[in-house]
Amino acid sequence: MKEMDKFIRLSIYAAFVFMVAMFLAAPVSAADTSCKTKYPIILAHGMGFTPSAAYPNSFPGIYEALKACGADVHYTTVPAIASTRDKSTAFKAGFLAIQSQYPAGTKFNIFGHSHGAVYTRDAISNLGLAPYVASWTSVDGVNHGSYIDQIELDIVALFPSIKSLLAGALPFTGDPAQLDANDLDLSVNYMTKTFNPNTPNMPGIYYQSWTCAYRYYDVLKAYWDGINMIVNALKGEPTTINTDPAALAKALYDVLPDLATEAYLLGGGLGDGLVQVNSAKWGNFLGTQMGPWYSKGLNHIDAVNIQVYGQVWDAVSYWKQTVKDLKAKGY
Image 1 (tube, rainbow, N blue to C red):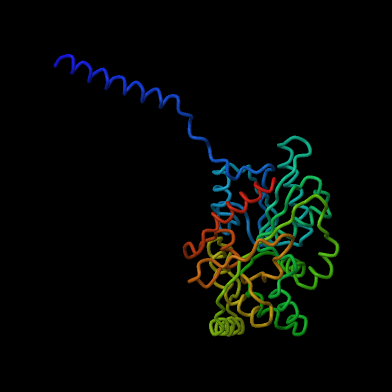
Image 2: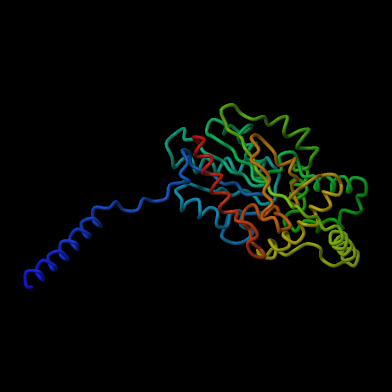
């Protein structure tokens, strides 16, 4: 009996030693490198946005998620409201500041949201950044101009006195002259007749794009909200939102369904409220995201994970997959 007890104790001890040895010999869990692309990533924000911690933050949760899965990612800051060239000049400065942290000649993958897709393309093609760019990804980019922006400009051209009534159509704040320059540069006429012909794709750079869009358009709501805006403007009530970031994000989120509906009814096709699908396409088009089948679809700021009323769509996962796919392509 004693021999049996001794055998049992030795067996338990041996098993314990074996388990400890296996634990110590096991490799430490490898860090997630699924988003570690060959080239570092630079994020470029859109009109009226900033990559700060406060809303409207152009990449809330996206920047952090990409870093967590191994991406070497940075972001730049340009004026929220300004002409394309002013923004592209500021972007170039930010790009070169980031590049200075790397060996000479290092290339980067650029992701531009909204106007960010336009001013980065300008910096690549016209300001000398092409040799240092491996790929360019447009997210809801205004690549062929904003249909709703062109409509507003055309109306004002025909009826100049109505400009004050349309001042609050988009809740962006800032210098009115800069806002006018920003709007003009994103118009369909300017983008298709001036900007694009003078901003060709550069050899050796991979260009791709994707966008979001609504699938449901509420005509009655858009009509009613438009009447209320005109009535309030005629009554002299303020039509512009204050500069509180959260209020600005909410105001933009609320107006996008109406803008998307107006553009759709006037022949612009599917869109996210500010950019139509046909405008967003550039290079290799990855597709249009509309969120879950039961939703009304996705808007311009759903694309960058700004969740005003809670999560509608897992933007972070889509961004991560896009980066993983870019990695698989060798970028």
